[in-house]
Image 1: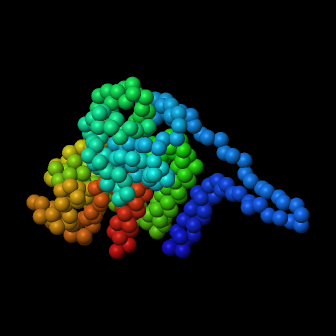
Image 2: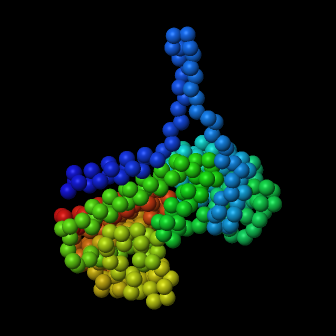
Image 3: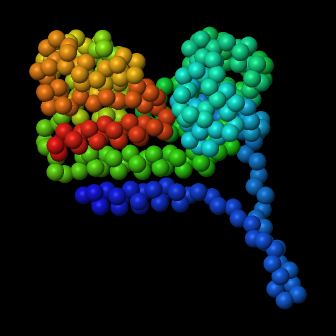
Length: 322
């Protein structure tokens, strides 16, 4: 099975990378008394261009060289498509990659004057708390609004939008194809026979007060690719997507797996979970099927969602094949 999976991955990755354009120039050479010079034609500039983001059509006149990102997810996307060198400042939550130029800017309550002080030619945000887009627009600074993704399709579209906006369209397309390929392989490995007809159940914890996610959310859809059943779904009568469960509800549901997305913020782990009243008898606890996740991966929707899915798939494999 491992050989088959590796083989599939190799084929998909090769396919994803095969679309990359290669531009070469042949060095002048002399043949007898004739000198031949071969060069490629100059590539036309993709700018000015228009990017259709969540805030509508945004015109970008020239290649941005001073990007300010107030979104940790957008920051990760920019560096993943090779636009990191164009980023001059990121918000205080953009802790990945390490080379990102972290500042004290904030995306939660952005200050127009503080942003303008960096003299940006493009600003990326997750949400507009008021008139941020209008204020920056009045100063001639284009802004792209890239809100939380509702699906993988949204993730891919945002990556492609940033590729167009920064002059890295091909790199963005290559990244999307590679993500699709990796997700396909992970899903294939997790759902390939032999598998039980009975679905494994799981509880996904956002914080110690038992807020969770349903299958309609981005994270819920991602985990759903692995064929798991979410215990939070029946508890979300209003369709909010993020119900607060009770300890009694979770104990009664007795999930096969527990995923903790509150390890950094709240120091949760299998030991802490086992100390909760009534939790030490849960199947996931007694079998050691409580898995700590990286809070950042679980709260962002950038290229590393593939790593999150891989981590969860590995946990599922451990449960299915102890």
